[in-house]
Image 1 (cartoon, rainbow, N blue to C red):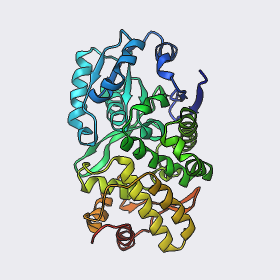
Image 2 (image 1 turned 120 degrees about the vertical axis):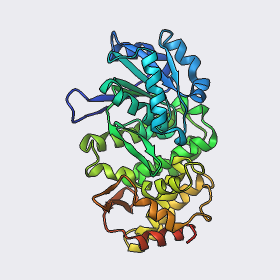
Image 3 (image 1 turned 90 degrees about the vertical axis):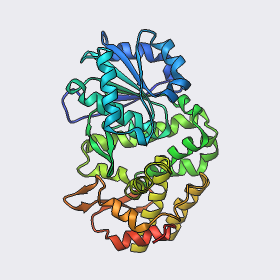
Length: 363
């Protein structure tokens, strides 16, 4: 088995880590953890749904490790769920010599990672991402946290993991909708940094949708390299790392105004990218041809959940509570062309409202 090793350099001393990627990696989890964390005890954190799909192979790989199951999904991503996880960590006698191994998607990784960052003021954590979003994005970079009733990811920390172990074979159990939802994050990477990745999706989307192992490894590895470079240069999102939020400003607002019930995260980001593209086109910085390429690729993934019954005004109001607002200024990511974006801070409410109405939102 060929393992791709992508390093992430952290600003904090001794906080560098690796993302290891290979098809079938889970079968080697035991020896890998023994090398990463010799003599440390392991406790597995997952959700009932994920454990039902993958628990058997993890129990075989780590027969001595206890497992803790917590609710998954955006509506469970809150402090009350973290408190229940603390209770179970205490019951399992987890200490600072215990490694938390998180097996799950982006929501679970954020939630359990926040628990790891704060339990006993920090315990080691290893992420085993099981969704496209988690493998290409959320498990990388050390962002952990939970939602507040007034906004997404408003309570959290930067807490680098000990390692991220990505096995694209785990993606084969995802539902078609869940798998496709993750691909919007891959499109994001193609727009913000490299037309090569965008071209890969345009050319090989059918193979990726068929979950071809080689193409999945290639896709996950390329996205990982991009994010690793960005977070190495800007770990705490003071500048460059903001480009990773392309599509997320309107996307997070859409999730919030629908109480996290209508959209998968990637689907909301899909709408957010379309809104950002329309805003860029209206400013004259993105050509019609580039907008069409983005729209066509998004459409090839299938129909997004509807937005025609949602209020553009409510969506704009929700952006005021976005965590990307700094001292009252919203930093917005606008595409300039496929492979390049700009960070702007002068998008006003009227502009954003027009862009949202252009993609189909009501007044």
